[in-house]
Amino acid sequence: MSCIFGVDIVKGSLRGKRRPKYAVYVLRNEKNNLEFKEISRAKLFRLVKMYSPNIIAIDNTSELFSSKEDLISFLKKLPNVTLVQVAGKHSLPYLAKRFGLKIDIKKPIDEAKVCAILASFGVGEEVSVFSDITTITISRNRSLGKGGWSQNRYRRRVHSEVMRVYKEIKEVLEEKGFEYIEEIKHGYGGISKGKITVKAPRNEIPITSFRMGNVQVKVEAVEKDRIEYIPLSKQTTYTIVGVDPGTTTAVAILDINGKLLGVKSKKGWNTSEVVEYILSFGKPVIIATDKSNPPEFVSKLKASFNAVIYTPKEDTSVEKKKSLVIPFKSLISNDHERDALSAAIDAYNNHKNKLINVEKKVPPGMDVDAVKAGILKGLTLKELIDKKIESKREKHKPTVVKTVVNEKDYKTEEVLKELEIENRILKKEVKDLRDTVERLRSKIVSLSKDEHERIRRDNYIRSLEMEILELKKILKDKDKIIKELKEKVEALKSMKILEFTGWKSVKLLESFTRNEIEKLEKEMGINEGDVIYIVSPDGGGKSQAEYLCSKKIKAIITDSGKMAHTAINVFKENEIPIIDKSEISVKVAEYFAMVNIKEFDKKYMEKLEELKSDKVENLEKIIIEYRNRFKI
Image 1 (cartoon, rainbow, N blue to C red):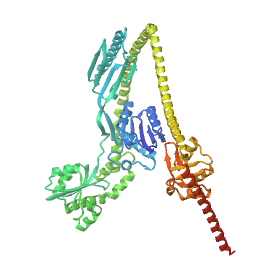
Image 2 (image 1 turned 120 degrees about the horizontal axis):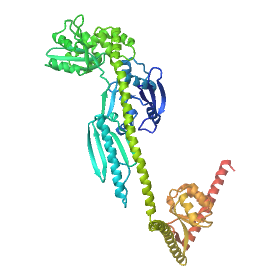
Image 3 (image 1 turned 60 degrees about the horizontal axis):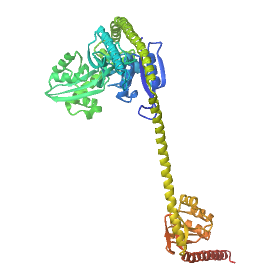
């Protein structure tokens, strides 16, 4: 039973983050059709394997495959499936309308259903990626190894098996009458690799890929240089042609639904060139002129195409011509093209109502455009429908039985032949496996004590090397810590020497940030009565100042001009003097700072007095303001 899949993407994208979902319509017969409204790509491929469709019909290949390689990989796995792109030259809604099918473009399952039905009508293009050439490669299935006392015997056996399978496949191809070209790479005792290029499509070859024991067989279709789109059947475009003959001849072409396809004018345009131009757009049904008495040139064209001629009751006026071509004014370049186009439009308008009525009466499955063309040529709708039914009977009835019988016989013969080959190979495989077991047993016995000792020793040395590397790393880290501690010891020695010469150590804060404060407290500690030297005071604010004040430090030494006012106010409120580094002598080392004791003590007392004086002044100001306010 034939089966056709119609597929349309619901949401997501192959190239986006959101995985795609698909709607699938399985067309089998009128009663057993199936619908899957939203499934994953993986489930779609599982359904394909389950129902084995003859055709997978899609709107566009990019909805199902991210690249040419992805498409080729899919078709290699399913060699008997024909992939059809339905909407190639025309959109899906247009094709649905042309064949009388209802479609809601907002429903992906509707689009999937229409794809399947259109493909069953022979609408669309086969996506062809493989040529009619197939390669069959027969080679070793396993490595021959590094060698040994029985290596030559093993090599000879493997190559002998490859040669035997190669000959059996050739016999099958010759029995079927296939033409082929062979390439052989000889090996010790037989063939190491054989390649057979068969002049036939992959689905006609009665051999499949397989692996057995020492031999592997790979059957692959040869890829084309580019993807080809082969029409399933020829879809004719029917046209209405307007002609204005003369020294400069003009031709305008509409499709049977009134859409402008082309307009052209040329001086000295001969009949054969005009015919070629018209045929490039499709098959003419009506040849139209703007004259009531058709010119000879128009009558010749009508006879050439076996078309219907259209003439108005009287010559068309210039005013009417201009009004007819208003929608296409920008597309015409002279009066000749205007006259030709107006004639075509006038002919279409004259039959428009009849064509619209025909659309409503055509049964689904018939080419509406073909029916319209027949109506314009004088046939009735009943005659066209009867003709279509009779054509289907003659075309399909006798060939269906023949095709089924031939296909059944062919598949049975193919399966039997494959089973015979597989049976012979499996018998040989059993024998090979027994030989392999004996060979492996002999090899195990032949392993010497020295070999076991060498493996043990190598493993032990490897573990020692790993341990040495780890210890070297630990030693390097220890050396780094020792070096840092030595530097700190030297710095402390220098600090002690300076303390004997009238200098005092203070704690060093690189920057006025919370991280640096926490680092200093962790490494050196911040205690009551400490003097803090801040190298870079900018960046610090109220919270940092309050934290230092909470530690009850004695004083701050820094560049006071760069300290934030909020921080300065906090220190003043807590009576902690801020001494500018320019006011005393300061020496800065890597881990600490030193200040001259006499200069520091003197400046400290001055700053402390200033803070107290400022505090008294502020208090007096507050009292004065209070008295003035309440007039005490």
